[in-house]
Amino acid sequence: MIRSSELRHSFMLMKWIWTQQMFLCLMVSSTSSLVTVYQPPVVASALGQAVMLHCQLNLTLDEKLLTSPVLYWDNMNTKDRLWPQTVDKYINRVQLMDKNANSLNKSILLTSVQWHDSGKYLCKLSINTEKEKCRKLGGGTSLMVYDTMTFKLTSRNDTTTDLLHCKIKVTRDPALVLSVVHNGAKLKSVHQDAAAAQPSVTLSMSEPVRGRGKYECQLHLNTALITKSSFLHNPLVAEEERDADKNVTGTSSPTVAGAVVFPEPWFLYGSLLLVTITILLGIITIWKGKC
Ligand SMILES: *[C@@H]1O[C@H](CO)[C@@H](O)[C@H](O)[C@H]1NC(C)=O
Ligand SMILES: *[C@@H]1O[C@H](CO)[C@@H](O)[C@H](O)[C@H]1NC(C)=O
Ligand SMILES: *[C@@H]1O[C@H](CO)[C@@H](O)[C@H](O)[C@H]1NC(C)=O
Image (tube, rainbow, N blue to C red; front, side, top):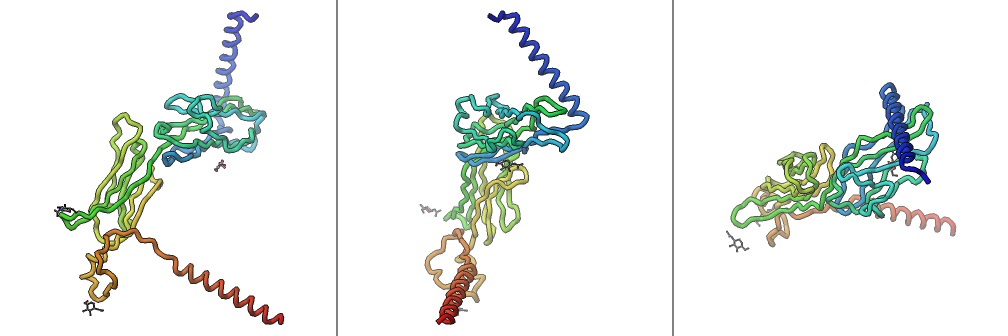
C-alpha cells in the first residue's frame, strides 16, 4: 500500500522535473528557437459549419523528434479541453486532421460551430527532441462566428430614394467590420462598440442608392474578406429619359429597381457548341474516309 507521504513525494518530484524541463526549454529556446508551434491568429466560421483550427509544429533541420509529440487543444476562455476529447460538449465535434502520431500537422476540425464557440483556442505540444524536452505553445487562434448575411433594397413610396439594407450577426469583436461598396468604392462601414456582454452582435446599415452599378455588402475580419452579398442595380425605368436614343423594349410593366442579375455565359455556350460541332464534323470525316 502506498502511503500518502510517498504519493506526495512522487508528486513533488514530478512537479520538480516538469519545472526543470520548462526551465531548460526556455533557456534553449531563448538562445535559438529550434522548435516552434504556429497557429494563425484569427479564423472565421459560418454558424453551424465546421472550421479548421490550424496548428503546425516546426522543427529546424538539425532537430529530430525522439518520440511522437503529445497534443493538447484548449479553449482559453472556458478552460475546456478539446483534445484529447474528454469534455461532453466537444465529444464527436472535434477531429484530428492528420491521424499519424508523428505528423507535424496538428490541425483539428471543430464541427457545427455555435455562438458560444467564439473565443481563443490554444494548441500545446509536449515534445521530445535531441536538444529539447518540453511543452511548446502556439500563439492561440481567435475563432469568430458569423451568421447568414441579408442584403436587400427597399423602395419607399414616400420618397424617390431607395435604401440598401445590410445585416449580419457576428461574434462581438472590433476586428469584424461591415461595409457597403458601390462599383468598388466604399460607401460606408459600421464598426462595433467593444462593450456589452453577449457573445454576438448584429451589425446593420442602411444606405441610399447612388445610381446604377454593382453594390456589395462585405464583412471583413481585419483586412480579410469573410463573406459578401452583392447585386446589380439597374434602374431601367428611372434612367429611361436619359437614354432616350436607346429605346428599351419590354419596359411597359414597371421594372423593380435593383433586380438580381446573373450574367449569362453566352460565350461559354457558344464555345461548347463550336467544340461539339467540330467533333461531330471530325467523326463524320473519319467515317467517310473509312468507307
Ligand atoms: C494541415 O492539414 C490540414 C488538413 O489536412 C491542411 O488544410 C493544412 O494546410 C495543413 N497545414 C500545413 C501547414 O500543411
Ligand atoms: C405607401 O404604400 C402603402 C401600401 O403600398 C400605402 O398604404 C401608403 O399609404 C403609401 N404611403 C404613401 C406616403 O404614399
Ligand atoms: C423611341 O420611342 C419613342 C416613343 O416611343 C419614339 O418616338 C422614338 O422614335 C424611339 N426612338 C428610337 C431610336 O427608336
